[in-house]
Structures are given as structure tokens and as C-alpha cells.
Image 1 (cartoon, one colour):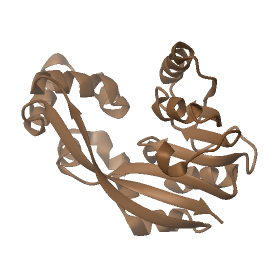
Image 2 (cartoon, one colour):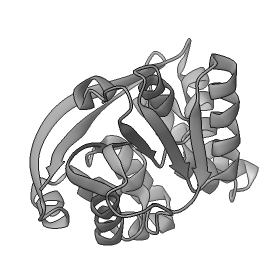
Image 3 (cartoon, rainbow, N blue to C red):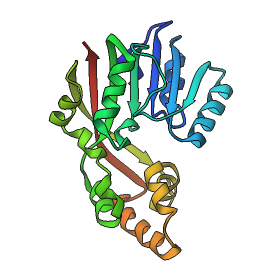
Length: 219
């Protein structure tokens, strides 16, 4: 995403719903003025620690993608890697991204599509009826969210691997925020049953999912 957005030295770059700051830290290496924002105080603390350890200057804020604490037209580039797609109000999140982007600013968003991983979640999790993140994988839906932008779409695959299916599940269940939060509401038996369902997709210890890369330029 950083390579595609190609931030220049001195440009203002926002990593939106930044998690532990993976995109922000890479962007900071280009010389851009980087800000990261996430709704989770725990994730922001980890991002700050990672930036300090790497010797990079990044400003991190705790905040909501649906109510950004920034001025109109403040950023030259915005990235959101599997982040803002989890905001409940897609239109509001998209409007806020547009608002804080200057005319001509570039943005990149990655989204999962409806796949087997999603289908398992929809079968097991009652909260999935309120989780619409996969709609960001639909081009017409996204076009409706960004009427003031020129858009293009690419598809790719993302893989995560570990030594075994059990190890891969351990990693995913402790690092994917919506999944982790849901699992913490379950008792031991329910959690074991959920793990058994998900591990059907993990084969020899890896998970590969298709994603959509949304690229836009604000008009």
C-alpha cells in the first residue's frame, strides 16, 4: 500500500485504523509526516512502542474512523489496511476519509471478500448480522461511498502461516481484533468448538484469503 501511494518527503500521510502501526512505520521510512489513528488504546500503545524501537517519528492518536480529529484537507495520502472496513457506518467512515483528504489526495483501502472464513463466522457468531465489513469488497458499494473520487480496484491474496494448524489458530485468535473480542465472550467449550470449525481452513498451518485493494484519488 505504501509503495502504491508513494508518499513523498514532507507529505502528510494518515494510517487510518492503524492497529499496531504496520503501515505507518513503513510510510515513515519515506520521510513523510505520518499519523496513525486507531480506536483501540492497546493497539496504539503497541504502535508507539514499535515506532520508538525502530527509531521512527510517527504521531499516533486514539480515535474513531467515523469522527476523525483532524482538519479538512489535512492529508496528502491515506491508507487503511483491513481497518476502517470494520467501522459500523460505512458512509460516515468514507465521508470522514474524504473530508480530511486534500483535493488530489490518494488513498488505499484493503478489504476482505465473502469467503469460507467469513461463512464460518456468519454461522457461529450472532454479531455477524451487524458486521458488514465484507461489503467493502463490492465495487458498486464502494463507488457509492466515494462519489468525489476516481477509483480503481485490484485483487490479491494474503497468507499467514505457522508451524501447524493449532499454531496458526493461536496466532489468529490472538491478533485479529474482532475475532479475539468475540472469543473472549465464550466459555472454554464454546471456544474449543469455534477453534475446531475455523481450523478446518488452516490445513498444514496456513490461511490464504483473497482481498480487494481499493485505490482512489479525491477530486
